[in-house]
Image (tube, rainbow, N blue to C red):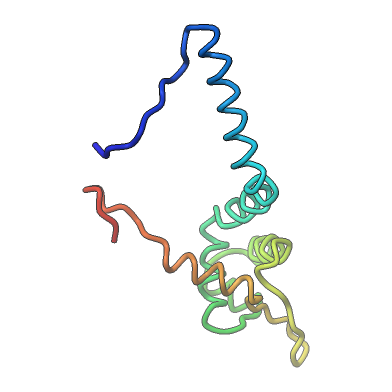
Length: 132
């Protein structure tokens, strides 16, 4: 086990408990003050990434723009399902559209490209306390 400094938790002495609660509130204000402003955005992004079709769409669009019919074929999903997930990704600012020769093509925004890069860099545990 790592050597982490552990403060006493949940003191029963009322005076110590009051100090402990004050310390916790201070920690919460310091951490959530910075993090709290963007927590909703992070939660929204993670929810957006929480579906295998949306993740696959990001992968495909990471190589080149695709129209809906291409994504339908690649994903073996219905047109309505692909359109739904594309709209979800667009709402989060990850994809945009461009009309070319009567077809609507979807492509990653700069933000979408950065998110895809981040996904590729994400480490995964191997089960032995190591990461691949």
